Each structure stands twice: as structure tokens, then as C-alpha cells.
Length: 476
Ligand code: B12
Ligand code: SF4
Image (tube, rainbow, N blue to C red; front, side, top):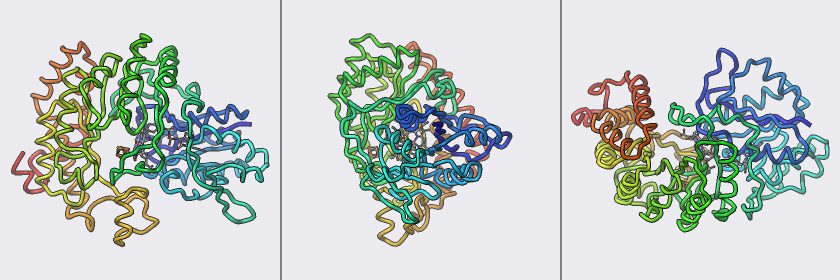
């Protein structure tokens, strides 16, 4: 039995000369877990990440025609592209079975059009057997599995709630051999690793940030430190040089995170690591253990430099906690990266000015900005639905009127202004240079210079003093 598992490109379903690379940080971990399950059920598996793999159309057709089963991982932002992939697969090989899963399905819990089976939940335990029954024409067995939508006699059947793995310590790991790690390792467009690996040590998130689709979807669960470090040991032995923890928040239980790091150090494992953590979990003891174990960079979801906006997002953190976390990490020589979201309905131009004032007053090495959208599954989206401002089938609604006073275009200008205000500071580079000397690691300097040049090219259309909303112009 042959299976092809596809992560559609976020830039469109295109091949050959039309195809554009979408540099990705890590291999698609979800599909590697599913790939492992399929292998255990007797499939030959090919994982196709169309973001990084350039194919001619004929090669794609060849792979699909040879497949008994095609699996597609769906993100909400790329759901139309995923739909185009499914339709294309149907055209190329009408006899192939098609199954979809992934973050979009887990947010919406709705059947995905054009598929034989839509899978809700975590795939590593049951996806293999589900696919085997599907391909072997044993459709009646599907009802034995949880978390499915499938068609039977023209009717859509649902088989209960999504699959949530209870004991992550006993779950199978991802089939890393199915992807070539050297295609990945690109962070904000710059290559930081030639052999990157990703893993998860926990699933779910106990917090309730109002913009987020993860809140409360799954109960928070985690693996034991020794079990986690066994996997890290395998990753180090396989020659990976950077490990990214692909989870919402590595430090939900700080004591566990500290034990993981202490065990990495005790076993003498040498690998750079990076992960996303909440600012309110940071203590000096925790970050010292991180640094000693080899943590290279920490990513903080700071979101805003004003308490009003943090409270709007129900982030349950304070601006001061953000400042303290970044200062501590910097002092220990860990590279600091923070994300901010622009476009909360209460935001006006003074908020953006305050954001920039805040982020330039703390030792942040990198910042990234996103413009808010209201996504199906988030509390913000549900609230707007109740207020009659979104339709149930609008699964991603960009912010802007009627939600807030500022238009999307204005927010884009604030975004580009914020980038420039942060990166176009000679002092920033001086600080980075000193930090690189202090840590003996010059990767960041090289990285940040290339990144700034890229940004300049990208945003050169926005003159620094023109084309910006009025009150910001006065401030530049
Ligand atoms: C790492 C990551 C990324 C990486 C992607 C790396 C990669 N190559 O996959 C990067 C940084 C590129 C990224 C980008 C984005 N991301 Co992201 N990302 C994550 C993160 C933190 C981890 C993903 C992961 O590896 N999870 C672990 C695996 C095991 O889980 P999984 O992928 O869900 O897979 C399981 C199941 O879903 C299922 N499954 C998955 N696929 C399939 C397929 C089949 C056939 C079956 C049966 C089952 C199945 O089984 C898997 C094993 O249990 C998640 C949050 C999270 N905790 O998942 C957000 C997340 C997936 N990202 C999200 C978003 C919104 C984005 C962006 C749109 C952000 C933006 N504004 O640009 C972009 C989109 C990409 C782009 N434009 O290029 C959202 C998705 C929401 C949604 N409903 O789609 C999430 C959930 C974060 C959040 N809190 O909102 N992301
Ligand atoms: S933003 Fe992060 S901390 Fe907040 S609910 Fe989402 S995953 Fe959890």
C-alpha cells in the first residue's frame, strides 16, 4: 500500500515555474507523526511538503497515481489551497482514498469537502489503522474509531469526539526519516540550521488568550522529563544541530521544564535549542537551567506593550512581566525574540507608539508582528459571531472596521513602521554585537544583518516619513 501525505504550500497549489518556495523552520511534525502510524500499518509513505519541495506537475501526478491513499494536513489560512489539492488529487486519481486532518480540522471540527474521511484530533495512534481499513475497502470498520467524519450510503457519519492521546509517554514518536531535514532550518527567511529537528513535549494549552484557536481545544498534557530527554538523545545521535520545541508553551509546568534541561545537561547532550514560552513563567533559576543545557533562543508571545491591549486579549500577563523575562534571558546570553499582534479593536496610534517605545526599551534581539485576525475557534471570533459581526462560514476574518477604527491598510502601515522603528536603530546593532562577543556566538549578528537588509528591501515602498497614519508621522 502506498500513501502520500501532503502539506499544501501556503502560497498556492502550483508547480514548476509558478511554484514559489515558502521557507519553513521545521519539517511538518504532524505529518511525520501520521507517517509513522501509516508505516506501522504497512504503508510505504512519501511525505510531500509543497512549501519546500519544487515539483513539476508530471511528478506530482506520478506520485498521486501511485498512491492508494492521500492524506492532507489543513491549516485554516490555507484551507482553500488544501481544497484545491484535494480536488486535484480526485481529478488525477479518482480511485485514491483521501483523508484530511490537521489544525484547521481541529479548530472547526467540521468535515472537509471532497474527502473520504476527515480526521479530528491527534493522528499518531489510530490514523494508520483507519487508513488501512479505508484502502482495503473495509469501510464498515471505520465506525470503531473515534474522531471521524465519513460518508456512508450518501450520509455523513460522525464517530464521536476528537482523538486526544491520554498518555503521551506511551505514544509513538514522529517518523523523522520521512523528511530531509536539510530542506528546513529557515527562520524569518534566513538559514539558521542545516539539520534542524522539531519535537513536542506537551500538547494542549491551559490558557485562554482570546485570539487563539488552541485555547481549551485539548486538555493540557505533558511527557515526563526522562521520556522527553530520551527523544532528545536520539535527535542528537542523528546529528541534528538545532532542536525546536513545536509546542504552544514549553513552561506550563516550570518544574518539569527545569528537570528536562537538567537531564539534558546531566547526559551531556550538546544541541542548540529554541522554544516558545510565556513571560509569566520566567524565573532566574529556570532560565539559568535553560542556558546551561544549551537553549539558544527563547520566543515570547508578548503581543503588546500596553496593558489595555493585553487585557483585551485576556493574556493574563503584564507588560512588566514581559520586560523582566526579556531582561533576564538577555542577561544570561539567550537570544530573545518576541511576537506582537497589531490591530486589537481598542488600539489607536498611541498604542502603536507605546509598543515601539516598549520594545526598544528592552533588550530584544528580534521582533515579529502579525495583524490580528478573528479565527474560527477563538473566543474573539465566537464573540463577534454572537454580536452578528461575522457569519458562521467566515472562518478567518481580518481585523478592521467594523471591529476596530483602523483599516487593514492603516494597520499594514503601522506594521511596517514598527519594523523599521525597531530594526533601523544603530544602537540595536551595537547591542547585538556586544551580545555576540559576550556569548561567543556570532550567528545572530550575521542573521540579523541579513534580516534587516531583507526587511529594508521589503518595506522600501513605505517611506519612513510618508504614507503613514498622521500621529505616527510626527513621531518618526
Ligand atoms: C511550528 C508551528 C508553525 C511552523 C510550521 C512548521 C511546520 N513545518 O509545520 C511555522 C512557524 C512555519 C508556522 C506558521 C504558521 N502558523 Co503555526 N504553528 C506551529 C505550532 C506551534 C506547532 C505545529 C506542530 O508541529 N504541532 C505538533 C503536531 C504534532 O501537531 P499537528 O500539526 O496539529 O498534527 C497532529 C494533528 O493535527 C493530526 N494531523 C495533522 N495533519 C494531519 C493529516 C492527516 C491526514 C491526519 C489523519 C491527521 C493529521 O495528527 C498530528 C499528530 O497528532 C502550532 C501550535 C501547535 N501546538 O500545534 C502552530 C499553529 C499550527 N500555527 C498556526 C498558525 C495560525 C500559523 C500561521 C498562519 C501564522 C501566521 N499568521 O503566519 C503560519 C502559517 C504558515 C505560513 N503562512 O507559512 C495555528 C493554526 C490555526 C489553524 N486553525 O490553522 C496554530 C495551531 C497556532 C495557534 N495557536 O493558533 N507554524
Ligand atoms: S496564545 Fe499561547 S498561551 Fe495563549 S492560549 Fe494560545 S497557545 Fe495558550
